[in-house]
Length: 226
Image (tube, rainbow, N blue to C red; front, side):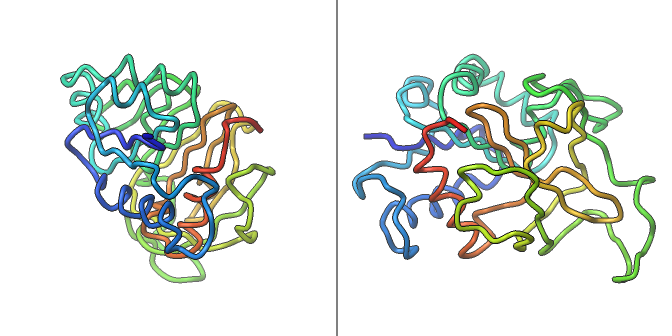
């Protein structure tokens, strides 16, 4: 049984994401995913395996233009869009930004257009420092995530928990209704988005220790409904 497919398009942190998911599935994280321990985490660019998976994770770091170019070069866009429409789907970091309409990166990069909105650069939009000290770009390190809606993926995650971020761009959706959490870094930005069977986070749950594993366990239990 392929419990979850981690889309491998040749970029990003797919191995660390898959290891974290395997850790949760094995029960070693200290809480149950609700799935059989024999469930497989497949890191794959095979369309048939992605299509057959019960859940899909779309991770990523780096440049959005390069990410989407590789998705298309490997002929994965159709199966990616099908997964976004039909099964529990988790986007991580660049995998969240790719869901928007457009990014300011590289003087303008069209994205997948799944969730209306833009991807903005922090430069020119945040001050050089605040009461905590200098604000450098990229935003890197631990920061509080403030939940603004109830969602199955927040189960067991305390309000204002800290998660690990590494990013120079942030998403600005057209509608606040899709924002599931916010974070402050010179401005308030969307740290998580939720719509129907899709959940996406700007932070890295696989690098966020026990609470990151908790969120991944919640994803493995989630049936895509809210």
